[in-house]
Image 1 (cartoon, rainbow, N blue to C red):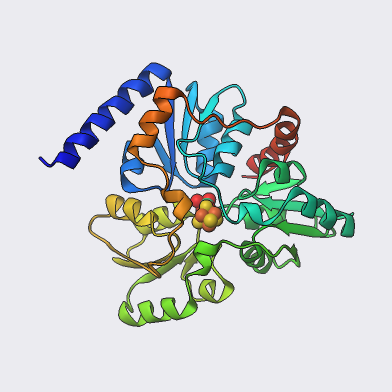
Image 2 (spheres, rainbow, N blue to C red):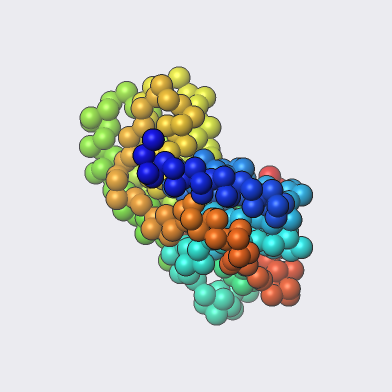
Length: 308
Ligand code: 13P
Ligand code: SF4
């Protein structure tokens, strides 16, 4: 046994002991590093994580993802303590629209319905009518009456995808995910030439030219489910590379090739076992949302949960 393995075992037993004492649950996003995914009670996409947060009877949620996800958990479970092991884990896209910019946009389009991708701050959600995730953006857009104008924020690529799928014109905001934008159409072309039998699964945060080359466009959990259900033995994966851990663990007989190894989200990689242990030891770092913002934001999240 290596020194590192002994250290990990000690950390893991410390985490499990404290988790039981605190009546805590550990939720992790599909992009978290392997050791974090492996110790989590639930690993999933934004939709699955918010449903878990809403339904858990644990007293403490240790949220291993990025800030907007932990905020969503707090909004849905205001009486629970929601902890982020590292408060620096933000989402670059979520910060691409400010509440002031949203207000200005609404002034320009006073009749429009605002659909916000869950990757935005609680304050932005509070100014929106409907929330959506990558798993249900098309469904949410389709559910809005045809005669309504729709502002879709902040992801212009998810918005473009939803617009094409729902056959609906949307007013888009100039936001995007820098990690997914690193996946280039030429990367996918090269990988397809190298692995012609591979199924191409991509996330809707990818650019339209990458999406156009995909066999399926899915949320992160959608990609995991498809990989398991599909008869294909090889897959080209167009999303953040942390997902490969879950894909390989759940499908050891299949092969997964990242469309680009550059699609690495640094904030998703900030959590580790040490920080989870410290989080449970010292109950750090609690995520708070001011009650009036939480109340408003919850309305748009609840509308989404009703639709799905
Ligand atoms: P999912 O909801 O599909 O997991 O996506 C979240 C995300 O941040 C993708 O970059
Ligand atoms: Fe945000 Fe992109 Fe990271 Fe997802 S991968 S958390 S959208 S920066």
